[in-house]
Image 1 (cartoon, helix red, strand yellow):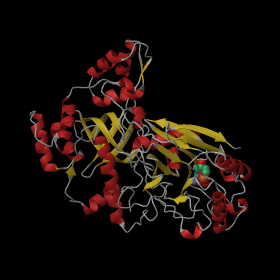
Image 2 (cartoon, helix red, strand yellow):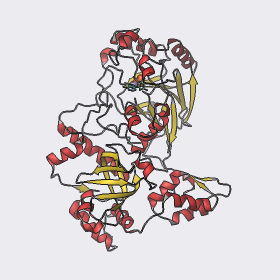
Image 3 (cartoon, helix red, strand yellow):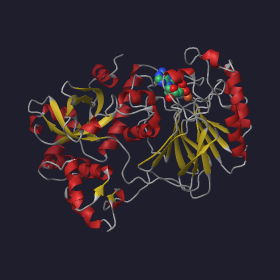
Length: 523
Ligand code: D5M
Ligand code: FE
Ligand code: ZN
C-alpha cells in the first residue's frame, strides 16, 4: 500500500458523498452565495467566519503586531501575537493595550479581553480514585484489512480538522481549486500533509489533501509563517490561510493553523489531597538496571503519602530488542523479567495504586495502541496494579493523565529542525500542538490503523506522561503539564553509540491539587 493511504484509498473507493462541516457540498456553495450577499440562514454559524475572513483585505504581520506593542513600551508573548493573527482583528491590539495594567512588561494571554480560562470538558470534583477513560484491557483492536486504514485516516483528518475548524472557517480544497472566483482572494483550507519538502530556493512546500482534493502550499522563507512551516511533518493535519495563484496550482500561505490547545485552557485540579509519582523505563533484567537506586526509591515511597505511581512503559528490558542485547541481560528469560518487576511492585506500599502501560521493550505487539500485558506475564504483580494500554488516558481524582511511552519522539527528532533527545519537554509540546501522539505515519513508530485514531490527543489531559527518551524533561504548554522522568538504567553500549546520554534514577511527583511538579533524585 502506498504511504499516502488517505489519498490512495480515497481514489480507490471514491464517490463517497463529501460532507463538509455537516453540509453536503452543494449546499455549501449555496451557503457561500448567501453569505456573500450578507444573508444569514439557520445553521450557517461555522461558515460565517470563513467567508468574512476571505473577504477581509490583508492582515497584519507578526512583526507589525509586535511593533505596535513595542511602540507603547510593551513586550508581547508570541502566543498573543499568534492569537491576534488568528483572530484577524487589528482593533484587538488597541483593546489589549488599553486593558493592560500599568506595571506590565510582557503582554500574555491573560491580558486578552474576553479570554477567560475554561476547562476542556466536564469533570467531577470527586471521582473514583483511578478511572481508565481509554486504554483499558482489550481495546487496542486488530487491523482487519485495508478498509481500516481508510477509516483511520478519515478519522484522523475529520477530528483534527474539526479542531482547527472550531477556531477558523475553511473551505473544501476542491471548491477552492475548481472555482476561479477564489483566485487572489484570501481563504483558508484544511488538509492532511501528504508530503513536505524544502525547495531549491529554500522555501517550504507541502502537499495537503482533504476528502475531496489536494493542493500544493508554498511557505516563502521570507514570510513570518516560515518558522511554523519548517516544523510541518507528513500526516499531520494543518490549516493554511492565504491566496491561490492565478493559475490555481499553488497556494501561497501566510498563516498556519494547528489543532493545538486553546489559549484559554484551564487544567482541572483535584479538590481533595492526592499526589502522584511519575516514572518510566525501568528496564528490569538489564545489567544496567540501577538496583540500588530503585531500592532507595522504594524506601522513599514507603515513607511517603503518595497515592499513585504511574509507569509509562519499558518495564523490562525484553529479549532481542537491539543487537547484542543478550550479553547485557542479567535475566535472560522474559517471564522471569516480569516476575522480578512484579516483586519490585510487591515491595511498594500496597495502599498505592500503580498504573502500568507498556513500551517498545515490553512483550506485547509493537504497533500502537499496544495492548496491556497478557495475564501469563503478570502473575507476580500485586492486585493494586492497574494495567493499561499504550497510550492510555486515566483519571486520578478527576485529573486526567495521558500516558504514552513516546516512541514517536524518535521520528519527530528526525523531522523537526532543532528537535533532540535532550529536549524531551519540547517533544511533548510538538505532540500537543498537533494534538497527536505520533503524527508521522510509516516511520519507526508502528501504528495499528484501527477504525478510530487512538493516538489523537482528545480529550485534553491535565498531564501528558511520556518515557522512552531516558532523559528527563518537564514542560507546561497551554496548561498541560508534560512529564518525562527519564529511566532507571544507566547508559547502554547501544545508547552510547547513538549518543543518548540518560538522566537515570529520577522520579517526578505532582500534587494533584496544585499540579506543581517536583523532581527527586535517587542516583
Ligand atoms: O530507548 C532508549 C533511548 O535510545 C531513547 O532515547 C531512544 C534511543 N533509541 C532507541 N532506539 C533507537 C534507534 N534505533 N536509533 C536511535 N536512537 C534510538 P529504548 O526504547 O529504551 O531502547
Ligand atoms: Fe526505554
Ligand atoms: Zn522505549
